[in-house]
Length: 129
Image (cartoon, rainbow, N blue to C red; front, side):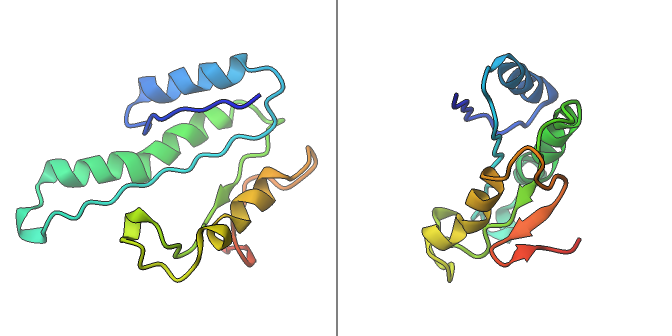
């Protein structure tokens, strides 16, 4: 059963609500957290609020998701690095196609119940921390 959320998990309540949706879902076998934003505000005009929004989404959001994921040890919880993929996030300057950028995600989404957990993987395999 697909479960989707457009939340950026910028607060604990948002992450908790998503966790409840996942916990209530029957037949869930894959959870993919794919989030990231950028800000093209010139440095001279960048405010602390601009930086806070970036940190909330790109740094604290994944931490919030990982916290509730730890409560479900039977799940495989992994992170994927899509690499420098041509998307709107980088104004399509990436050197990889969308298909190449999804390789690591597809690989992690298809692991079995005995597959790896707690890894950070890219297109070429596990990325050392």
